[in-house]
Picture: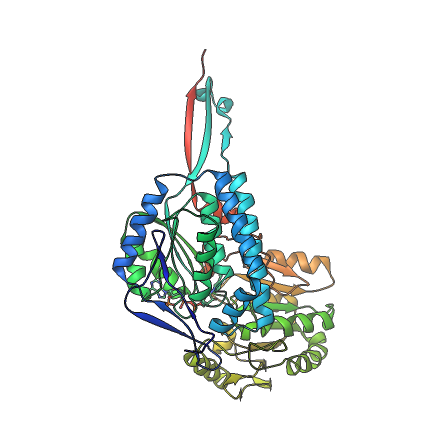
Length: 474
Ligand code: NAP
């Protein structure tokens, strides 16, 4: 292990535990061991569920939950650079992008603290029906129960924050399984929760074989909700197997952008260059497919390619780096294969710079190419000339995904048509669809998922209504 490597324990029932076996965490950039964590399995998962269930027997008042969330925010602020360095080390995310993620995690906790204090039910207008006359009714919003949370590698701090903070705001205890490649940031957040005074059992963090831990979370009836962010095949399978639970899925995309003939081409090119390659394209809403109306095509491509060539590819720990490694060798091999298989023209990139994939722009790929219809999750974007805005909408929709899409145009009409025509959970106008602010309702349609995150919406998803009907005195 490197001298700077981090060793962490797992949190189960308020205890920081070891298991006798360890998982090494390696840098995706140079393969160096950057940390190690104990390896958990089915037994630890059952203990964690026992602890979570026990914790929820003594509900935490909303003001206490809010205060703990505020303290965790302060903890991230205090250890902000450490958080960013952990993300950079275990995910290979460029340090400047990792710093943004750490700040966003603070925002996620801040909004969740507000939600904890706002959580309330609603009155039912009983005398709206004759049968209801003389009765008072209201619906309480109560925590759904123990939440099983599973998170991906690509935002190891902020997507864990999106699992934990709204669950606490809702009054739920959590059993979290972060991605095996990036468990350190999740355990860092667990340390902050512990320091902030979250009582034992409210948060349990397990790292280990996904199917073993996942199977217990699916099969144990005490886990009332599963919240999953990751790839589609894993997520939909979980949902199929957990028929009686609420299963909230945040999945992938093959993010399209439409550039209309009347767009500000300079802005569109800058936003695409910045948002197709950030974190080597490993965001679920990285720009992947750009459809440009023919009159703007030449100017857009001429502006885009030099901007992409100017991106600094290298060591994620360097302040200047824009594009670092993809998560592992399998991902690299797959992405290079997809580039090579494409029927389009590679305008720049398409090869390796050492072990890193150079930012790649492919012009006019085939409709059935993988880069046109599957999620690349790498530093690759396609640019296709189209004859009309309707053709652009049709191509943008020609995918099983539906998370976010974007349009660049100076016409309000075209923008509003895009908002209606694009079958996605979110549509951005004159902004890249990679944009996300953490309070937004964020989530997909079609294969991209079935829920919305953002603390307000996630709290709603993790609570249930209980109706109370009261006979009024006559
Ligand atoms: P992944 O391979 O699906 O892994 C996600 C999580 O699921 C990891 O913790 C993984 O554990 C776990 N997992 C894998 N197999 C499992 C099983 N059989 N049972 C239970 N858990 C299991 O996804 P990833 O490669 O980490 O992340 C990339 C994907 O996430 C992309 O498709 C991306 O678009 C999507 N994503 C979506 C959003 C969104 O908000 N919509 C945000 C970010 C990422 P191990 O690590 O131990 O295998």
